Image (cartoon, rainbow, N blue to C red; front, side):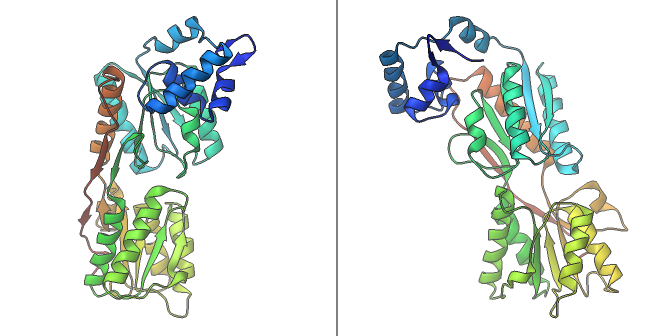
Length: 333
């Protein structure tokens, strides 16, 4: 909603102050997330230019709708889908309605969906950002909680200790005798991928295992991507003897490639997954993997956003990181 007085708009105030529209909106409405120095600067500019917020717009923005926007990059992904289900169930228990938005891992679509969500006057937003960037912050002026993503000191979030998880998974493979460990990770512009990769590198360094750049693959968590990149790895002159995958779907693709090469799992190739999807438990798969507590993460994200909405002035950014756990099956020695 575009607030204005005369020729001046809230966008003009943001431009003069050198901050986002969301920051100006929070300053005007006395919401947390704005430093006192910035708030005073914005109020001073408003006074100098004679800007007065539209009283009707303010009234509408403060009207509670009991609606939460949930932005997820891919609802068909088992991990993200389970998290979304847990969020929706918890919000429903507290009489909140959920508006679902699929962002397809596309930052521009995400930006558009954020604008659309707030145009529907949602009370809050829960989101899994599509990339590791601060740009999405420019389009948020309501209470927000991130899930499966960490972000500085300004926002609440629920995630797993991704760096520790990357270290633990790699350490486990090393302790089982694997020496040439490849990393089939997610996109480098996603925080969880970078953190897991950092953990992987730390484990290699601690155990004096060499890192080979050709063993790093940037892939989506899908069977097809796991298959394609494992094919490349297994065609190297010195192929890896283990792969640490960003997700269980990637690991399934790696298994398919290994079988096609006539390799035995776990003797010739150890495979480590991530998420502990339901399919990982099947006897035919029996995948060693890092477990993420999907339901708990979703439920906690929902509780956080409710707390922020209903006790806004008292609640500071909350940060919760779950400890990773390795589920041992037969895809590793």
